[in-house]
Every structure is written in structure tokens, then in C-alpha cells.
Length: 543
Image (tube, rainbow, N blue to C red; front, side, top):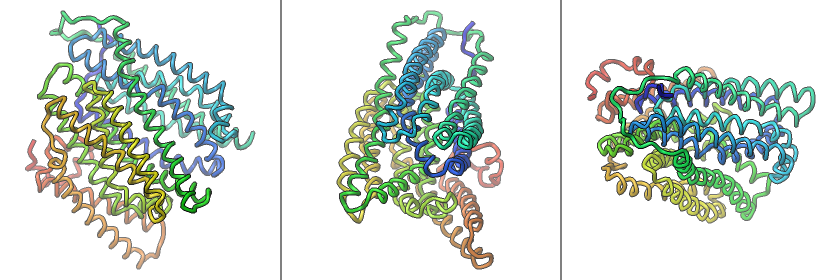
């Protein structure tokens, strides 16, 4: 009997499941953030964000590399019929992460005061201490998610993500409110972090339930009985060898955000802005990044879903499957990222009005909308290179992109009429450099034929038509509504939502007319959405 039990899902289905869960989590976050702000106030949110930055950096060190290594190792071992070592690899990684998570949790708890003072926010000490145990829980959580992703089954991960966020919101708001009321702001901020721990704990319980429920199953009747087993030392070595550069890579990306903030601040001061104004401008960048992050969640889900498929095909040296998976991943990436970019371009102001964001953030969103496409392509390329074991290339290319970003940020933020917008140029360079290098590496390593520009032509055309229709729809609806009912939040909200719905159908219809989509591509959309599409639109679609 084997511990492997979860039925493998297709890349498309796994992506759809993870992306839907990601969207649900993002929507819940949109309700959570303003509520927490009402409980803690602007000062409390500031203290909270400092504490959370410490937690996120240590979380990245703990959980960014090993879970991906688990996913890759399991998918490769299962692909060659080595089921027992696949499970052993998971258990070894679980023990390793439990140890690392425990050590960093103790470090974060014991040195909470020093860490808080180091980032310039001594008031964050209680919140840092409150977040410390979460590192241990999330380290266990991430091993199970890596295990299920390696098996190609995304349902347990998706379910755990949704429940994690629900419990996070409920407990964070409740403890923030009562501790703030009883013991003051610093205690309230610490209370606002308790939900992070509770949510992660609930998610772990859900994944353990899935694991135990499906723990035993018979091996395939036709299996590789002569498969070469690996020692525990070899399995551990593989995990470390794969996860270490990935951890460094992602840690550098987080360090890049810190560097962005520091460069932006002193360059803005150089051209005459005061500290308060520089902080406000950095807040606009935060708002822009938050909005861009919504579709990126879906692309990250796609990247997570294709990693096991790429790893399995690479382990089996199945070039046909590799070619199919790589090309299909890029197509799905473009189908989602390009219309999202056009949507942000034409609806930046209505979206920011809807969410209560600054009009300056709307300007940044319209200017930097197409960075979303580059971010998405890079996510997919990174996942492909991870899948074929080229993780050191990913790290090296990330360093080059980061260096380019630093230079561009320093130069352009210091130009008065560009200012904070220089960050967007820096991001463009940061993404473009590794995209070009990664495309060459993928072609050379896999001998796969793909042309990013050719693949995106029809999607660009459909997205441009959609963007024009959305812009006109919003303008007409909004203008007529103001004439009849006057200005108001609800008027903007209704016009925005109707325009988005109209745009979605126009986009899909133009794609169908131009042959830019096939029937199997519709699997990325929820079944209820597909059923809403008129039959005349999809009846002639090619499989």
C-alpha cells in the first residue's frame, strides 16, 4: 500500500481550482482591509504593517523554496513510478521545515524588541511576538501544499486557502477590536495578527484531514517494479539543492521591494519633496501594486499548476508533452493577462474610485497596466525553468533584473517631471531582462518551438476591441446616470460592473471570431460562466 492517493488533475482543472480560490481570497481581503483600518485607525495600521513586513520576510526564508522542491520532487518520482520515495521525500521535507520554522519562530519571538527597533517601529513589538508562532504553523502548512501540488491535485490547497482567509478575517477583527478596547492600541494591533495564526492552523488541519483520508491506496497494477530507490540522504540533498537557490531568488525579490522604497524616498527628497510627501507617494505605489496583484494571483495559480506537469514530462523525457504544456501555459497566461491589462488601462479611475484609492494611484495603474503582462510571462517562465531543474538560471536572471531595476529607478525617479513614476520604468526593465534571457534558456534546454508575439496577436486584438467597448460603455452609462441621478459612489459602481461584464462577453466573442480560443480553453472559466455563454458563440469552436 502507498501513501499516494489523490487522483491527479489536469493542468487546466488544477489551475481553474487554484485561481478561483485565489479570487475568493482576494475578494475577502477587499472587505477585510478597510474593516481592520476602522478598528485600528491609520496609526494602528502603520504599526501593523511594520510587524507584518518582518513576518513576511522571515516567512519567505522559511517557506518559499522547500514547498516548491517538494512539489517538483514528488511529481518527478511519481512520473518514474517511485511512489515510496515520493512519500519519503515529503516526510523528510516536513521534518526539515518543522525544524527551520521552529528555530525562526523562536528567533522572531525572542528578538521581537530588537527587530521592531531595527525597522524603526518599537510599538510593533507585541505584534511581532504574536506573529512568531505562525511561522512554525505555516512551515507545516506549506509542506502539505507542496505535497498536493506535486501530486497534481489542487483541490486541498484551494479549500485550505479559502478557510484560512475566512478564519483569519474573523479572528483578526475580533481580537483587534477587543484587545484595543481593553488594553490599548499596541495590544489591538497584536490582536489583529492572531487571525493569521488561527487561519494557518485551520488550514493545516484541513490538509492533514485530506492527507489521512486518502492516505492508502494500491499501487498501479502496471508499475515500474525495478525502479531505483533513493537514500534519505540523497532525497534531503535534492530538496536542499533545489530549494536553496529558490529561497535566495524570492528573498532577493522581497529585498528588491525594500530597496525600491529606500531609493524612491531619498531620490524624491533629492528633487525637493519632503518626507511626508515622499511617504504619501510610496503609498500610491502600494495601492498600484495591490491592484495589479489581483490578476497576478490567477497567473501564480497557473504557474503552480503547470510545475508538476512540466517536472513529470521532463523526468520522463517526454518532449511532446513538454512542448504541449509549455505552449498551452503561455496561451492561458496571455488569455488572462492581456485583457486584464487593457481593463486596468481604460478603467483605472473607476476602479480606484470604487475601492477608495487615490486618483494618483489610478494614474500609475493606467501607465503601468502593461507591466502586468510582463509579470505574468515571467511567472510562467520561472515555473517552467523550475520544472526542468534550471533554478540557478532563475536566480541569476532575477539578480540581473534587480540590478537593472536599481539603476533605472535611481536615474528616472530623480527626474522631477517623472518622479515616483520612475518605479514603473524600473519594474519594466526588471521584468524584461529575465524574460528575454529565460525565453532563450527555455528554447535551448527544451528545444521547444514557441513565439510569444505570434501567440498573443489575436488576444491583443480581442483585448483592444474589448478595451474600446468597455471605455465607451462606462463613459455612456456613467454620463447618462449622472444626468438622471446625479453623481455618487453607486453610480460609478454600477457603471463599472456593467462595463466589465459587457467587456468580458465582447472579448470572448472576438476571440471566437478570430480563432484565438479553443473549446478546451474554456475550462479555465467556471462551469457556470461557460453555461452563460450563448450557444451560437461556441458551437463552432475547434476542440
